[in-house]
Amino acid sequence: MTLLAVLVDGVIYASWLFIIAAGLTIVYGVMRILNMAHGSLYALGAYAAASLAGAWLRLGFQPMASYAVLVLAAVLVGAVVGPLVERGLLRHTYGRDEVVLVLVTYALFLVLEDLVKLAWGVESYFITEPYGLLGTVEMGTLSYPVYSGVLVLAAVLVGVGLRFGIYGTRYGKLLIAVIHDREVSATLGIDVDRIYLVTFVLGTTLAALGGALTAPTVSVVPGMGVEVIVLAFAVVVIGGLGSMPGAALGALIVGLVRSAAVHFFPQVELFSIYLVMALVLAFRPRGLFVAAEARKI
Amino acid sequence: MTTSRRTTLGLGAALAALALLAPVLPKWALFLVVVSLAKGLAALGLLVLMRTGLVSFGQGLYFAAGAYAAGLARDALHLGDGVLMVLAGGLTAALVAALLGLLLARYRAIFFAMLSLAFSMILYGLLVKTPALGSTDGFNVSAKSFFGLSPASGVGRYGIYGIAALSAFGAAVGVDRYLGSHLGRLAPAVRDNELRVEYMGASVRNVVHLNLVLAGALAGLGGAVTALAVGHIDPEMAYWTTSGEFVFVAILSGTASVAAPFAGALLLELLRSFAYEHAPNTWQLVMGASMLAVILFLPAGLWSVFARKRRAAR
Image (cartoon, rainbow over all chains, first blue to last red; front, side, top):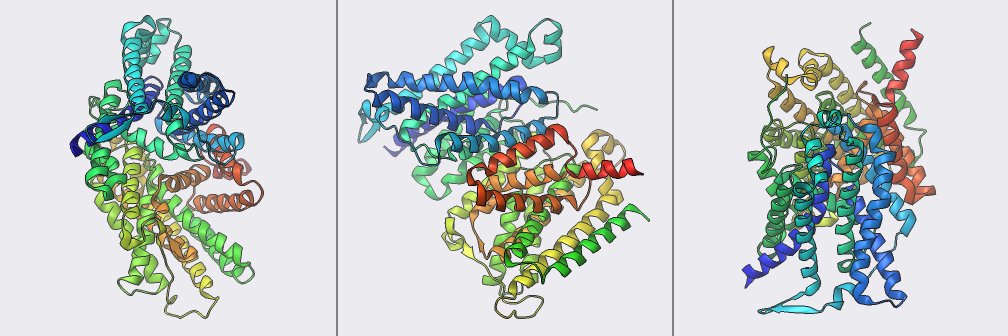
């Protein structure tokens, strides 16, 4: 029974992680930016969802439609904040060292953290209705909220959507070309600037979606993105930076390790994830899904 | 006069100024200077790493290790003198860095940054779940004596101030000498092109490892000084946001001078105390915006403004 609980908890946690990590890894894959502000975008999504869905329910609209409102909030954050950040800031830093870009996004993280506080204040927000609306489901002696199933479904949809979008469409193929070689793609007439913009908007939307879907299950408070960013880092580093299957596997590993730790060794819960990350990096320095690179003279 | 002699003289003058200022500074300013010196020590360690081409997002690990070692030196080993506690902090952090360096020295760029971050989060998780060390609350730290003298009540802070000033001075002079030495000059070479350094017959890995230990020891000293000054330690010192603050100071000050991290840390602490008082919710905003401005417009750090002026004047 415990084993089943570990599995189910692990998969639920992994789904949540995957949605966030997918955004992080695609931005790195295309733009070579390890986005430290990803956690803040996650928090923005949660706040936007709490406000929008909260207003939706207060005005007495159909509560079942509040799930669509959550997704809409995430898309809104992506469509507004994404271009602002990419056009306003990141655009001026392309071509710099990867580490410098980490520092730029770290600075952005600091700025966004306070902007969130200025916009929403420091008190916490609750929108529990979408969480409780679907009731619970019994699995043997355990009962799980159906909402967790929605989360898993969302992660699967995101995964399938990305897979189809990248490998099955013309735009996705252009994206792969840019990932392989930015300059050659540009000479072949691919609008790299536009691809960057679209990628960043997509990454932002995914981070915000992670936040929006989490909003009903937690209290939305300042600083909620601070821990998320290091978790998402662990996921994508385990899987290999820039690799989508890597993000999926990394999320699953981290999710299962965490839920096993919670059930069997609660005292190691906090650092079990980072321990796994350190172990993976010790044996596969670039993560599970990335081949080693030749050193350049 | 060689540049290193000039730097030593300048640092000596700064130390003398600190000594002269001690009696006239109010209590809060004394504390502010000590905390800045402590953070400056950690940022100085980052300067050494950045010269090697590495940015660590996990210096909080050594910072916390130093602080906890200082506290345990008194509680478990009965080394109650402030000087010994700080030395214990630096030494422990150096040992931890030497051990982790075995693995870390193989990594570069963002992988190095992420792995060091992971290690610091592991320590954070360990500390939070260790009741013997006070879990999330941490525990209180105070020194029994300073330089062998038991302080009269209320004078202890001058002892801490003295230790902070002397360790900052010693560290700055030591790092300056080191960076000017043959071994130290390999650091920028490693940053520019590792393979060529190896062709010349030097071991890149040893250079990186040594600089890691140095950076760890400096962060440990800073952590121990902070523990004495604040009188309390908690796991938050190992959290990645603490490490981020050191990165902030190091970026702000650049890698040009060993004095810059201390100036940068002082600027940070001054800004912070004013921001906390007048606009507590915009503090990080100011920090982030100034960091962006420095990265975009002054890639070599604030110190480069002085350097440019000096060159222009010559």
